Image 1 (cartoon, one colour):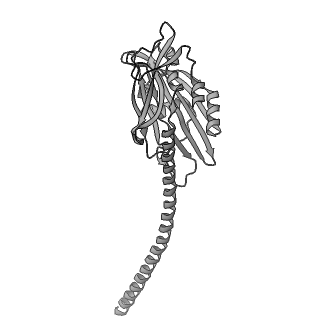
Image 2: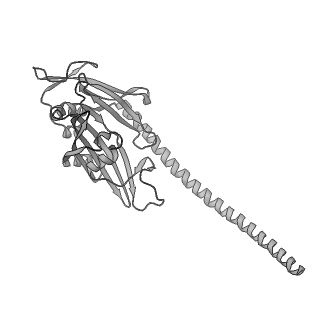
Image 3: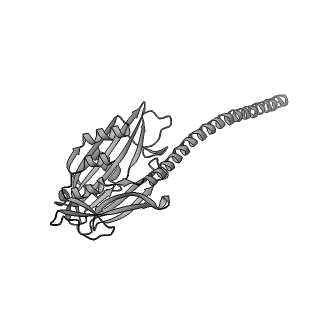
Length: 303
């Protein structure tokens, strides 16, 4: 993660120092060329309130939200957070991540959007702007629904690195800049997304492995980007939290496998019961036919 974030980042020319949490010093460089940052510790109430992740944020900026758990999906927990400058409204936002599955010849047809073993059934999207609109446009980034794309930049070196790190044959990485109107003024927003793809036979597994955005009033985003990248570059997962997360994810895998095994046993039971039911119906049908024959003979004799 550190390598990838460093590749995406613009180098910060000013020297960064760590401020105490809650420091109110402005994030602008002073005359000495020093920027002040505060270390933000994000705790997870879902795992005994231990520290999940930490990073540096510009001093005086405010953070909201935190770790969010999704027990029905393979990606069990995601950092969903906004870090905002109270003065300008400039914001760093960590976006949702997700795994997807697409089967060209499924045994049982499933509608797109279905949760299948923790992954969402959805055809692969290789165009980054299309993915942003499809996956974020109606949820996390609603402000981009009517936004105008200013630049669409591929990041092939990042994509190659991500593919190697995840052991997949294909990946796409990109930065898309948007412009839109908000509260009577023009805003700019850069959305960074990385997608990975792993085709196997008739099935493609693909994922949004990284997503975040920088937004600011027009004319300020380029100046603030190095500052915002510092937050992304200094992100560190807690070893204790990551170990607990891996354990919970393994429990989820076990639950999915047990569900498959249970489904197999249910199928066998249905098959056995179906044979018994068919035999029962056959016996009932035979008795009904014999009874009808007796009635027919009696009726014939009566006539």
